[in-house]
Image (cartoon, rainbow, N blue to C red; front, side, top):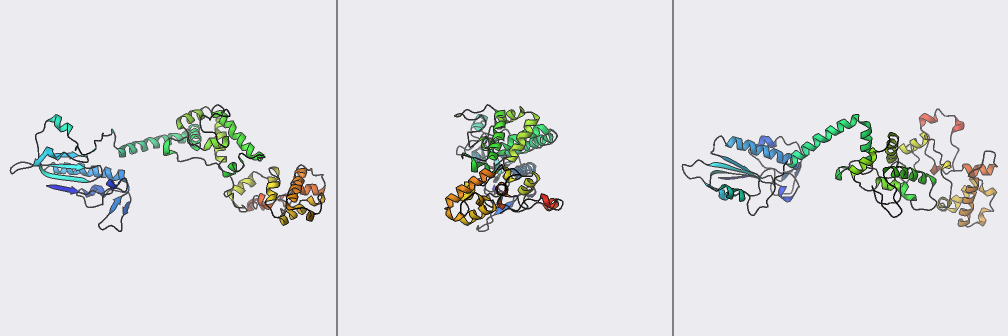
Length: 408
């Protein structure tokens, strides 16, 4: 007798794996399934699929083993297969008076086929071995470990190493650096650094801000430590030539084992420095396309560092050229530039931009004993270049005299 049990199966490893979830005799095993299901609400018949393929197949194997053990108590034999097609010609239907057996086949798609009342044909062992698989089926080499067991063992190994890393601080930092630099093996890198777009904005430009050059110099320092400095036309050993050392450190995937060995050679101080730099490369104003006047993380950090943009930036032709003529005239009056300029109405916008940029260059290093118009030029800063209001906890305890001067 032929009983085919359309087994429950997961979605969607392949079309062959999409078997509807129907009743199965050893149902107690499938009731242990803890994964999720996917249902086709528009199917003509019930069509519910198991999402966790590995868990489903493991339960199917347990169910088949239990079925075989149970049936072996009442029949002459039980043969169990896990193939696409059984060599049924090895069997025939039992005649009256013959003790029949049962054949159970668990297909790769998860479907269970059961045939009972069978008697084995007498077949030479060599022939049976050569024809065990159907000639129409693709012959598969049985792996040493099934996929679900491979995953199970890998999880045990992962948790053991994680536990040891908790106590091994330096090794943990080495791993962190390798992962942040995209040196993790294959697709298992779950942590990496995406450099802040502010770095790319000024790359390749003449007259880059010195803050950009400072970050690039720090990245180049660690780049040299990790391997030989690339010649002009050569590629670094750990990443292709890009817009700078800062990008080479974090941009492309790298050989994890090789990078780890390079990182291990760093001193404790250099390891800490590189670890911090990789985080710093990703930090900055959250949205470059908005004026951040709020109480953001970025602004709080800037306040803690005592950041004053007058130490890092001066109004230049790029900034002034992006303002309207009326705005430029207002800036000229607020910054004391009108003292050394002709009548503003005599200038075209381009002339105003050039004259005002020179005014800010001349007054950049004015001392406290300079003339009033020079001090105004030195101290002028647009509100957009400030870091929002001071946190209340600080503003309440700080003397009024120490508060920032008014902007525009």
